[in-house]
Amino acid sequence: MMNKQQFLAAVRLNAASVPPEELTALLDYYTEMIDEAMDEGCTEEEAVARVGSWDEIREQIHTFRAEPNPVPIIQPQPSFHNTQSETNTAAPASEPAKVKRWKNISLPTWAVVLLILTSPVWGTVVLTLLIVLFAVVFSLVVIGGALVISLFAVVIALAAVGVVGIGAGVVLLATSGIAPFLLTLGGGLVCVGLAILGGLLLAPFAVFFVSTVKLVFRGIAGFFRT
Image (tube, rainbow, N blue to C red; front, side):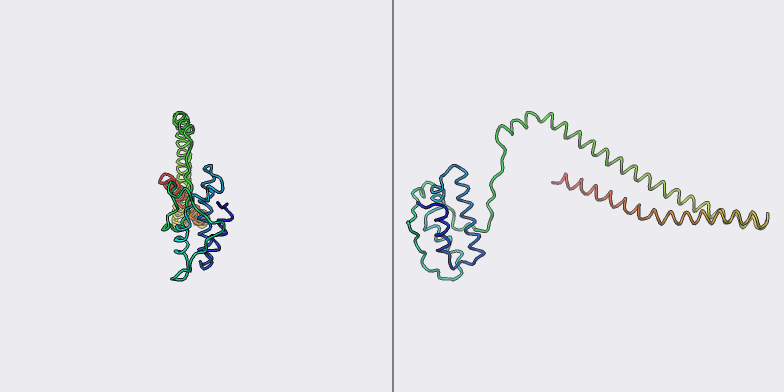
């Protein structure tokens, strides 16, 4: 029987005409099969024996050869014979070597039972954290929205006061003289200027706030979808 290195060397010898990238995938495929068998408790020789007979391996290598008429495969020395080929499942010849065979990830039975028994505890904790997180996000959205609306209200109020002040200044010019006119007109122009400045500063903040809220809710929706 052959060990892992001897087996891979024999495969590499018989796959000389296989393209390099295909040969790498084929060797990785056999290496993973042997490693999985060794993880299950087999010796290195037993793991190699479980890969399959050389007739089956020859068919798999031939499927990766570049030429249409493959040359006869070289029988490795010592000769490899799978005495367990009738009882063990051999690697199917049609299975692509490029397909990654991921190991199944599963929890042990005691961990599953423990999770079920403690579900009222950790379920309550998780639910509480989700509620707190939702409350915090909702509060920030409400507070931020209220702040934006309040600032816009202040800007609108300043603009309205400025327009009224300018109009009142025109009336005072005709009724009370130049001094009240200049004072009222100046106050109106100041209010209009503050309103314009506030609008210019507030607009990017409002856009940023709306974009952030959309991003947060899109992330929450994506979390629940997964």
